[in-house]
Image 1 (tube, rainbow, N blue to C red):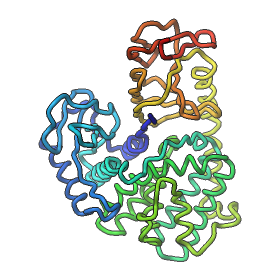
Image 2: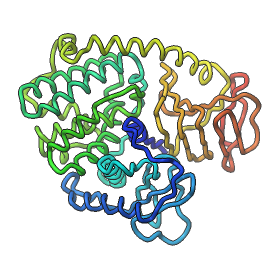
Image 3: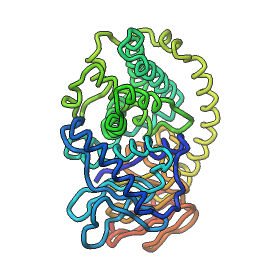
Image 4: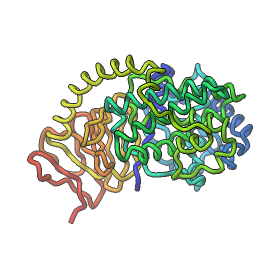
Length: 419
């Protein structure tokens, strides 16, 4: 089974300062209003975007108090396990629902709240659309060059979105595609990994904007806002910025693109095919149009600070004793503050949960996801035994048939099948 991560929405809310208190009770009347808002918007869409209705059963829950509200009567029998502090689809009573923790739905920002709910409703129908490629592993986006060229792409996309239909927009699209090409030249394998995340999560972010918007102008403003960037890690989040921009530009230039896109598509390639202008040849000159020198100076300063943190993470999660486990299963996390360790993977710090064949992991003190996505590791400070394991900021419970064993490296352990 593949890991399912929900990285993009949570950090976006943090940036907007819109998150509600995490310990609030779910109030039925308030939840009903949210359900009605989302239903009205998906009924208005009426399958326009994807040929399938976005409408479906919904749950709002609070992981702290255990309270919840549903958009339709609960099925008989025990409820499913809800996805902790992240949103996600759940199977309940033979149907596919979508569930949001209450704190992700800002009470005082209806536009953001509605976009988040439409984003989730797209995920509910995503499997039947065939847009479920495996996760991309984009640790290169936490490097100096990865961040510089990604932000240049965003700046050009924003200019294109805000200048739609003009010669300036055409130039900006050519620049964005050139910056995208340069980044992928520097990082072999980046094209496929980025493409997968843009299809899996970028299309959901686009749908949240496109189904919410009352007009193309609304969609353009929302897409431009998503491209603002920030001091957060781009790993597992970049597609929340890129997806809406590529989508609205494709709406302008290739109105039938949603019937052509598939799980192996590249949104940049689609946009390139819709324009009559090739990518800009001289990326240095193009970068100067977007204050590239100042951007690089700022990113170099950030990188110097980041390297100190990376060295500490390498000491804890790569060189020091760790517990390693298979990563396959259903996982959720908030990637705010995530740190990429070149050649090793990415450390996630907040609200990480994994439900897997071997058992369950809960962690808030840091989890290293290997660069190839095959394993997870947490630091250990002493011997581990039994079926309930604990460490600094994490706990794990083993299912029957699985055990913890000493690993090759002294002081480390691994979770394996019992012989």
